[in-house]
Length: 223
Ligand code: DC
Image (cartoon, rainbow, N blue to C red; front, side, top):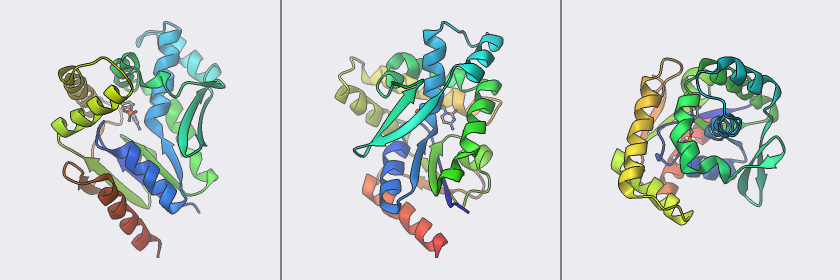
C-alpha cells in the first residue's frame, strides 16, 4: 500500500515549492494537480471552448487530453498531448480562467479519475484544493497550508516579475482575491480544510521551516 500525503491550500500559500521539497527529501512522487486543471484550461482556450459548452468540453476531456507530469533535472515539466506546456499553463490568461474551468463538474470528474489511479505509482504527495476532502479523504497525512492574502499576493507578484511578466502588485492581489472567492464558494469540491487536516500558516515561516514541519509529521506517522 502506498503512503499518501495530501496538501491543500490557496494560491500563493507555498504549496508548490514545499511539496516539491518534501517529495525530494522523502523520495515521494510529487503531483501538482493545479497543473492538470491548467492544461484543461489551456486546451479549452486554444480550441475556443467556452465554460458553458459542456458537450464540446466533454469531448475534449474524453478524446483529446493526455496530460503527463515529468521530472527532469529536478524540475517538473508538464506535457499536454506530448507538447511541453510548462510555461504556457502559467500565463496571466490561464490564471484568469482556470478557476472557472476547474469549477465545472465534468472537468473535476475527469481529473479526479486520473488522480485516484496515481497511488499505483508508489508513495505520493499530492497538492491541490480538494485532495484531503474529495480526492483522498483517507490520505495518511493531510496538511492545510495557508498564508495571509497580502503575503500570498507578494509571493505570486515576485514569481511573475521573475518570469518577466508586466503586471502590477494590485492586479496580482485582485486576481488572488477573485480566485479565492471562486475556489471557496464553488458548489463542487470547494477549497476547505478537511476536519482532520493539520493547519499550517506559512506567512511568517521560511520554506525550509514548513518542509521540516511536514517531514516531521510524515516521519512520525510512518514509524
Ligand atoms: O495551484 P494552482 O494555482 O496551479 O491551481 C490552478 C487552479 O486549479 C486554481 O484556480 C484552483 C484549481 N484547482 C482545483 O480546483 N482543484 C485542485 N485540486 C487543484 C487546483
